[in-house]
Image (tube, rainbow, N blue to C red; front, top):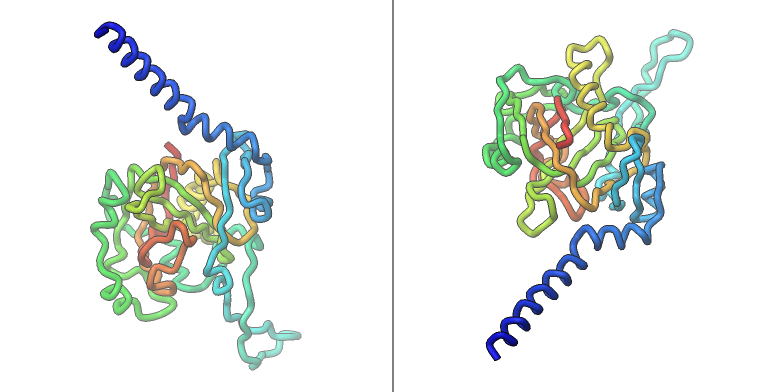
Length: 282
């Protein structure tokens, strides 16, 4: 009787293990992938909602699309009309909307110098994203310290950091040619996941001292992400990619309050790494 009971117990363990294997995440992903279209133009994802994206290296990822709640407020620049015939022009400046992909260099104006330059500070290393964000000053102190739209990097922003382990959730190309890149603390979204925005900047002009570093970071980011992304919204990896990110920190007073990012993975405050000086897929 005891022998029979032991056999039944062992059989139950084996059956449970086989059942778990059949319902493993890899099998679930494979089953889902079989129902999705494969695309090579990332912009098509906006209409499909979810698809398999095949990048320029031939790598495939299940990706989904989510709108950018702030898209209608992005990219408004005040531009003075050009004078005609060389004469001076006293016409008032007009609001003009930038367009994505109309330039391969930074195409914005708010705190342009800080966004396209690196702090000379020594590099600080952090094993995780959470360890880094725990060192950031409060938003009220920062908002009071930044006084204008052309403000240079202030003392609290004079930091270079390296986050050795984080996860890439989503990215969105903006009208100033920066990419909002949403990273998180865990490889799967949970209620405790902390999200953070790191900006892969559109580089400054080629004669700028930061050009080579920022362009190299952008090129590295684009080895898996899509260079031809010219649609609004956020493009998500269903299975976030592990990355290492370095750069100078920046407080985005223009969007103070944690409004940047998609609804499902929004950073809670206005701190960023901006610009990114190194972006490495692990």
